[in-house]
Image (cartoon, rainbow, N blue to C red; front, side, top):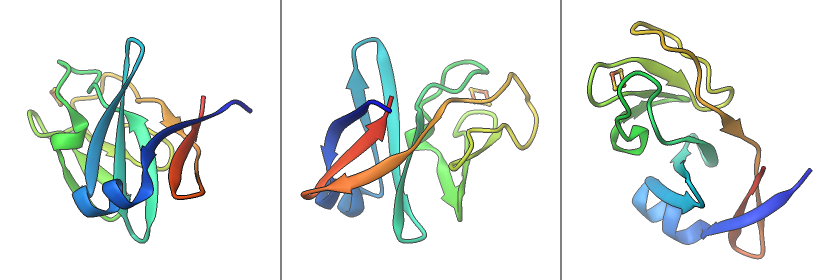
Length: 101
Ligand code: FES
């Protein structure tokens, strides 16, 4: 495991969804159901920012064409199906969100 600190927990909770750039990657952080989840931000269909999507429970609905992704596994749950997004394990250490790269 390779944990990396990427955001303040307090900030993610307040904003509910936040994008963090990590090199060439964009990671979307979501606060829902009392926990912080992390998936790749770029929708594999045409690249919409999933952090701008609509969250219901542990699923985010892409804002452009409404593909739905699991926040826990990154699986695509509905069409258009261009595959999953990467999901990252998260943990909180000293008020900071860490993801397992
Ligand atoms: S860009 Fe996400 S479903 Fe089309």
